[in-house]
Image (cartoon, rainbow, N blue to C red; front, top):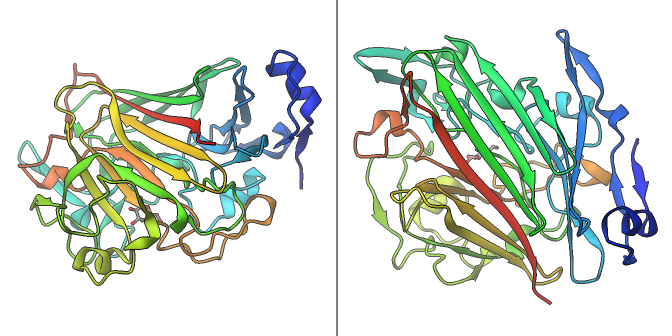
Length: 378
Ligand code: GAL
């Protein structure tokens, strides 16, 4: 195992204005991620702020590798699942540990859609459907690093016309900024040379215990949404928009994830737990960045707030985690030990005229902002 241990003293001198912190961060060394694949360089980048919050990212999939935040015992916890080396990421069973997924995050039914009268067939990689951009989605690509600084990194990926079946050459830039308010701000900007569809999202599996194989069922969740998009048993939206009132999908009041996860409610049965698209109350209409969800783990005091300008959020409760991947520090990705909170347009929007448009035309700029903000409740 290759990792760099930064001690409390080192950290406090470097980031904390001399204040000693009785903790250590187990950061990975760049050498564990330096690799050339198909002539392109993969590496590891470290962002930190003055509070000691630290994020490591790789340009393989514009991916978050670790994310260290303060917990109530005075130590820092790494709250995202992942692996210790680039080779482990390249071999992983679950390829969705921390990347930006796209061109279309989430599912497109039967992998096809019609745009301006032309039918496009995408790669099928999830039963009979298309998921997270296909087998060669953005999370499997090596991105160009445009700039990297102490608290900010910008990466770019140019997706060629026809890649995974999508029309148009698409240029996507993702900017990660770590603020002094313990926010990881993720900004997406894209343009295309032909009409296409787009819905990138960040796909970390969070565990606010710190990554230690503990169930995320104890996390207390709030989602600021009153509707969701029901699906068929393969998680493709039917096109209906339903109220969450009197269902186990109602998270308007903070509720432990595990309280209702096994209810025999139809949507929970098809999702094998939570794996749904909640329509946010403000529904992206204002273009403002607003609070979408909030997660709190009582044992560590860590609070994660998710803010977005997007109309919806997918909350996935780790129902497909198999235990087949052994990740950082020996963590096993057991059933329901990580949750994803993916800010996004609705799944399968290209096939539903009543969903917000996912079309990007030449001359337009796609933009999205997602903020993962960390706080402590003592
Ligand atoms: C989620 C999706 C789940 C599952 C997971 C990856 O975003 O909602 O259904 O596919 O990604 O295992």
